[in-house]
Image 1 (tube, rainbow, N blue to C red):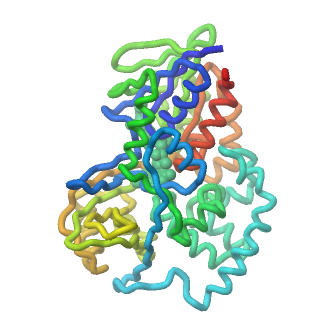
Image 2 (cartoon, rainbow, N blue to C red; image 1 turned 180 degrees about the horizontal axis):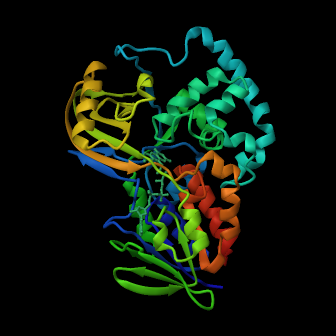
Length: 408
Ligand SMILES: Cc1cc2nc3c(=O)[nH]c(=O)nc-3n(C[C@H](O)[C@H](O)[C@H](O)COP(=O)(O)OP(=O)(O)OC[C@H]3O[C@@H](n4cnc5c(N)ncnc54)[C@H](O)[C@@H]3O)c2cc1C
């Protein structure tokens, strides 16, 4: 039966879900609080060169297929990669003497992961064993995967997913499944968006019937006959269901059960600073010695992995005011020998909505699953799936079918 569905959040999660729901025959209204849809997909331009302040790449065949279906120009690129030490000198990610240990651990990994396939293969968060709720670091030590830990860590820390000593093992392993891990290690065939990531949002938005910009959802009020009211500064409207794809203030949701679950999500500040450089660079550089420090350079990404370009994007965690953050990053760049001319754009983001290992162990995601659809309210997108474009795309297609059955 055709339903009227409200989707809260006009990021990749919200728009992609709306796309699948419309495809399944429903009438969908997307509410986005900003004057542009896209959230973490945010391309800015310096002269004609595009620079990503948010999402930069994808990894899966399924994603590239979906993007082509939307008419988005995407291509495989090789990302050149470096690790620099505190002295600004190049260093190997792992010492030559550790290579044999790394190979041995990588070989053992599938066997170690075998008992967890239910949790690791699920599209969202399901069947999470207690062993994977401890920190990723503790889990690696428990399984004698000390060298593998060193290989995983840069991709977790530098992309804002958290320190290995803090992030629950399930998040780390879900993000860096073996295919993604090997794509990252070898920097091979990563998917880049030829005209900038925002083209994805433009194409998705063009396909949707009812996208409301500048319309923050301020109230979700369950009503009678399984209807739910959405309040925004524009007024109130009734729907058959609402799907929330973004963390909201608890006070917005007038269902105590959902509001209490929403209150468990945490996020952290993650900063992106885009510089115009004095010379052309093509290499993405990790600064491992800064991984424990807030407000310092973690990753420096060249906008042109295929041919050298003059834009550099610096990544750092922490809540520092931009003036102080920039001063610190400028020093880090200088020590590392990068000639960054001037900052031309920056953005402070919030990292992915996550809960503590203790909450996961307490059955947080099972409680979310039990609550799905109660009083017409659903959680989806980054709230219930690891939030990369690759994982979200598959998950949201499945979510639309699972809860709102295809009409085709
Ligand atoms: C710097 C950075 C780089 C990243 N790079 C990559 C990458 O290269 N590849 C990758 O796959 N993933 C990457 N990610 C992860 C990325 O966040 C996800 O892939 C994806 O973009 C998340 O989409 P989303 O819709 O869940 O959330 P968001 O992008 O956060 O979108 C949520 C939207 O909801 C809106 N909103 C919030 N509150 C309300 C409200 N009350 N009412 C209405 N609207 C509201 C927001 O304005 C926003 O537009 C990156 C994340 C960060 C922070």
